[in-house]
Every structure is written in structure tokens, then in C-alpha cells.
Image (cartoon, rainbow, N blue to C red):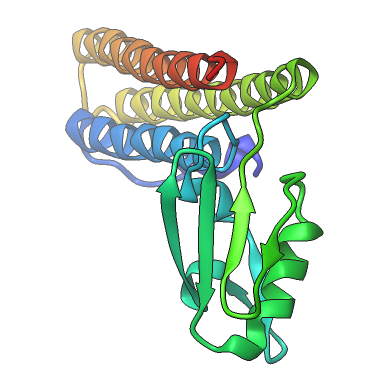
Length: 201
């Protein structure tokens, strides 16, 4: 995921500061929700279906999300069960989990796949925290890029005489406030996830 993908297109034609800010807010909101989605796939010591979000199963030649070929459940804190809708898919599902980067060991009884979630080792926790920090920084860069584009769009409004210099200054202050707000959301989300990863059950 490239940070630039959240950036507001700087050549867009905006007619007011309100439009620029609304656009900015939508893109920053997207950066935060993308981070939350990415964090759901980072496993903690507890069973969570989010860790399976990126698993694709070869369903008759088509890579298909796991939750579209099976029922997923968390019957207990350290176990996920996967019940394929089509029993013939039990092998491909198990294979998809084994070759993923989750480091988990599924087993099946011919009808149901059991996926035990072992406690995280100290080393694995550190790796996951590192991965989490990289993801958070990635999205901070996105938010900074969005801020830069927003400021450019405001400058353009001033240049095109659609706003006054006072408006320009106020808009830049407002954009900085929005940036601080969304940076705070990213930091809080990352901190919460880090606590989950490091928590010893």
C-alpha cells in the first residue's frame, strides 16, 4: 500500500475552502480506516477473525476470500474454527492458511478445520510490534501528503482570487488542526493494538 494513494488530487478544482476541507477530511478518514483494517490482520495472542481477512482460497481457479467459502467462528479465546460450505474445499483452505504469513498450524477432521492460536513468543511479539509501527508510520505519511495537497489547493484558491489572504491563513490553521486530529487517531489506534500484542494471556 503506497502512502500516496490517499493523497487528495492537487489538480482538482475546488471553489471554496469548505470543499477543500471536506475532501481533506474524507481522505484522512480513509487513511485511518485503512490502518485499522491493516491492523486487524496483525494477530495478537487472542483468536480474532480479522487475522484471516487477507487469506485467499483457490476456489475452482479463482482466489476467493476465506469468509466467502466457509463459516468462521471463535468458539474460545485461543481457537478459530472454519467450516467450508463445500467439503471438497477443505484441502485448499488448509493449504491457503499454511502458506500464509500467519505462522499457524491448521488441522481438520474431514468436515471442520481447527485453527489453534498459540500464545505469541517474545520474539514474535517484537516482530509484530515492528510491523505495526511500520504500518502506522506509513499512514502518518499519507496524512502528511493529504495535508500538503490541501494546502496547495488553498493556495490555488488564493491565487485564483476566490478567497482573501485572511481566509488563506485561517484555512491553513484549520488544515493543521485536522492533521493533528487524524495523527492523534492513528497514534491512539496503534497504541491500543500494541497493548493487545504485548499483553500476556
